[in-house]
Structure formats: C-alpha cells, structure tokens
Amino acid sequence: MAAVSLSVSTVKPLGDRVFVKVSASEEKTAGGILLPDTAKEKPQVGEIVAVGPGKRNDDGSRQEPEIKIGDKVLYSKYAGTDIKLGTDEYVLLSEKDILAIVD
Image (cartoon, rainbow, N blue to C red):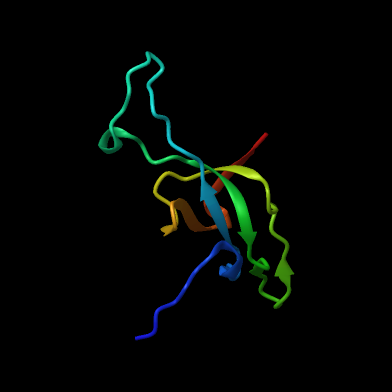
C-alpha cells in the first residue's frame, strides 16, 4: 500500500462537502479552572478552508454552496469526519451539518 501525503491544499471536497479547520478548545472554565485534555469538549466552531462544487439538483445542475472559504461557522457537535494534518485538526462535513455563519 502506498503512503499518501495530505495537506490542506491537496484536499478538495466533493459535492456539498466542506473542509473546516477546527478552532482551539477552551483551556479554562468561566471560573478560571484549567481543564485537562480529557475534560475538554469538542469545539463546534471552525473556519472554512475548502468548499466542494455544490449539491446536484434533480435536473443535474449544481446548487451553489451558501458558505465560502474564510467563513467562520458553527456546526453540529457529532457531525463529519475528524482529520488531523500535522498539529492542526480539521473536520470534513456536509453543508447541511453547518448550523450558522458566525461574525
């Protein structure tokens, strides 16, 4: 089996999928207590780094994605596939799993 070298620039999502760089999780609680790695919650906010061409309609045309590269988004907690490239964490998910664009 051949080894595959992945980087952000080589990942191109298909269909209505998007590639999101996960934001760092909180290290402290609101009260100032430091959290160990095992107690941290999975972040639900990230930045779009790649977008697929869009979902196909019944007539074969493509539906444009509502999001674009650089958008900061809020996505479902258990959605997508987690991917680690180097020290950065990413998630590959469907556009329907994105709940909101965060300003």
